[in-house]
Image 1 (cartoon, one colour):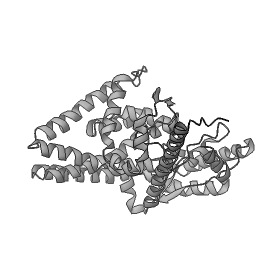
Image 2 (cartoon, one colour):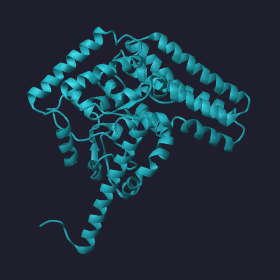
Image 3 (cartoon, helix red, strand yellow):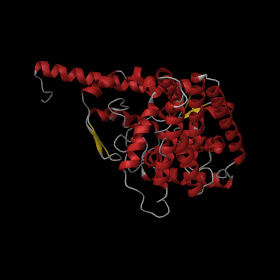
Image 4 (cartoon, helix red, strand yellow):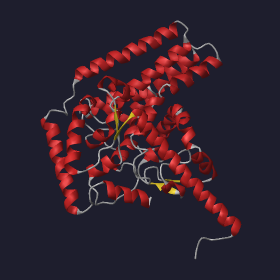
Length: 384
């Protein structure tokens, strides 16, 4: 971790008060420029195009299902889920109407009713992720022990302030993390099943909102998720599909098709620094230091759903998705003026960065285990 701290101190502006105040001041000016350019205004025609694409994919799913092409229909259903969750993300940030009730209803319908995932859980987790990005003790998005570790901080049992739970490093973690370079893509392929578990845990164990303004959200979530399991679990999987092998393959394929979404989510942060530089570091510098963007041509934006602009999005979470490309150029100018590094890779190279980080951490863990084994065999304590 000290090496990562040293790298961050070398690659980013000084943490002295004058420098960081200047960066914060430039960020406020950038925010005003974003507002003055009307980039907080949603371009609703873009959502007309989104809706047309969603309905077309859903129609293909229904047609294939009706014709008995069950695995083809599963692929289209997975693609439908993959695409509509981008709009759920927009709604979760109130980036569509900027109205609490309207955007919540959009998010509830897409995430809970259409996908069986709790938008409430997602917002609870995601808001913390935005505040303290990539901090091993606080950011739930990188707390994936025993399956993955993105920094050596997890080698000791680490308590999550979000989950109020200690992630114990044990023999399972020793084994799983040693192979995380190889298991990354297979686990991303089935990651959606974990989101079901996290959603259910949140809905039935977390405190209900006390505010009258939000009191309707929890019962609506539960009702919508019940509806999801009725239409998907009972109506399609149980009633429509002919036998158990087809049911199993249908469920697996439809869920695995959403794999690119999970890769995109992890891509933006897992290869980036996790070191905490303390309170002296300004908000914009921390967000840009811990987040990368993904370079892609504009015609491919619909594949990434705005998640390719994560660094920009972390600076301006409520800017509508379809304006992020315009904001990107402003952020790049901001980075040139302030000296804050702006990290961007192509999708392929970004994946290489993530795999490289996973391999690096696995190597560090293996070295630690070898040292422990040597000291145990030779009865050397390591203390002098």
